[in-house]
Length: 251
Image 1 (tube, rainbow, N blue to C red):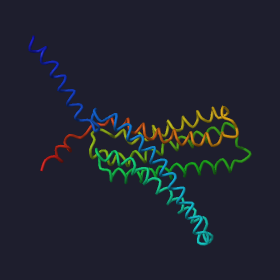
Image 2 (image 1 turned 45 degrees about the horizontal axis):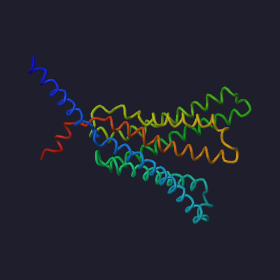
Image 3 (image 1 turned 90 degrees about the vertical axis):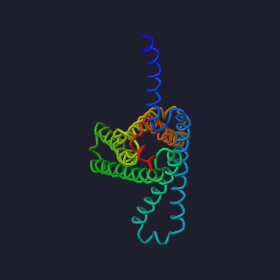
Image 4 (image 1 turned 60 degrees about the vertical axis):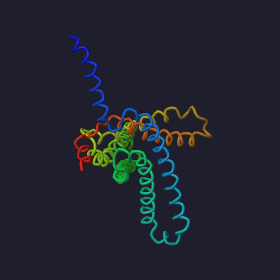
C-alpha cells in the first residue's frame, strides 16, 4: 500500500510532464507567446492598413493619365495590390512570432492567401446581396432588410473558413487532431461581428460630431485585438505531433 501511494504522485507528475511536452506552445512560454502574438497581430493590422492606403494613394496620385484610360480595370488592380500588401504585412508580423513553433514562411504564405480568399468571398457575397437590395428598391421591407443584413454578416463569418483552411494545411504538419482550426477564424469573425453590432447599438452615446471617427477607430482597434487574442488562445491549446518531432530529431 505504501509503495502504491508513493508511486501515485510520481505517475501523476510524469503524466503532466508528458502532456506538457506535447503542447505546441510549452506552458512556460504561453504567457509570453500570447502577449507577443497579440501585439504583433495588432501591429500587422495597423502597419498593413497604413501601407495599403499609402500604396493606393501613391498609384492614384502619380499614374493619373494611365488610370484615365481604363478606370474600372485600374481600380480593381490597385485595390487588389493594396489588399495583397496588407495580407502579406499582416501575416508576416504573425510569422515572426510563430516561426519558433511552425514554419514561418508557410504560415506567411497560408495566412496571406487565406486572408485574400476570405476577403474576396465575403466581398462577392456582400455585392450580390447589395444588388438584391438595389433591385427591390421601394419594395424592400424592414424585415427583408434585416434578413439581407443577417445573410451579409453570416457570409462574412463563414468566409473565415478559407483562412482557417489554409492555416490548417500548415498546422497539420506539426499538430495532431487540429481539424477544428478550419473553423477557428470564423469564431474571431463572429466576435468581431458581435462587437460591431454592440457598437452600433451604443452609437448614440457618442457626440454626433465625433461619432463617426470614434466608431471607426473603435471597430478597427477591437478587430485587431480580437484577431490576435483568439488565435493565440487556440495556438496555445494545440498538441504537437510527436511522430513528426521524432522524425525531425533523428538523423
